Length: 199
Image 1 (cartoon, rainbow, N blue to C red):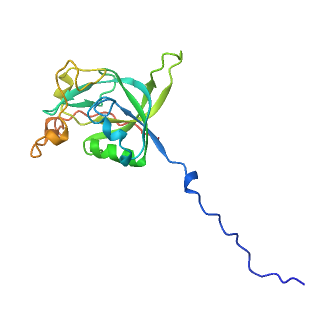
Image 2 (cartoon, rainbow, N blue to C red):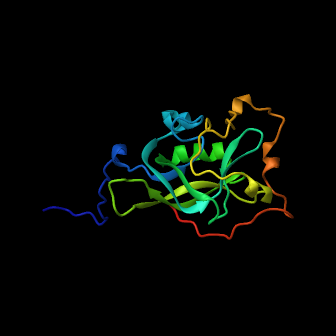
Image 3 (tube, helix red, strand yellow):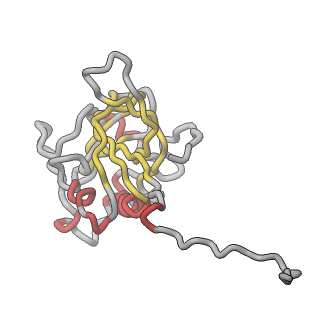
């Protein structure tokens, strides 16, 4: 005769196969020095920073002012929807680690603000343009006079504007260039808050 235990029998869980764990990826739209052939693109290529995979070229569904500002010639998209041009750039799939590295580079949320925006994928073969929701780094609370600068639709550090980007290693560490663009409470340009979505 078999004896049955009064206690329930628990199955031992199978060990987790780390190779089956899906890496969470985020789509990021870059429009400045992170693009291919631009000064900071190496950050996306460095596997030590995480995963950064090119997806497609694209452009913003909404017009924005893309400008170059500060003594270091840094590109910014000013968060002023409807003004400027449809900004061209590149879409990348990045993992959490790479997204964190990009946040450090862009000093989010103290300097640039990362928000979800609609990006149209450039595809000459498709009659119906596809859109992706991507993270985009915007400049908010900026000085109003920045809107008087020339607007671009496609940034290049070596463009005809002659305003070549100065890499961080060559900058004066005692100079705070953020004072050139960030507005104080009495003069700042404010954008209407928009809901954001997780990627």
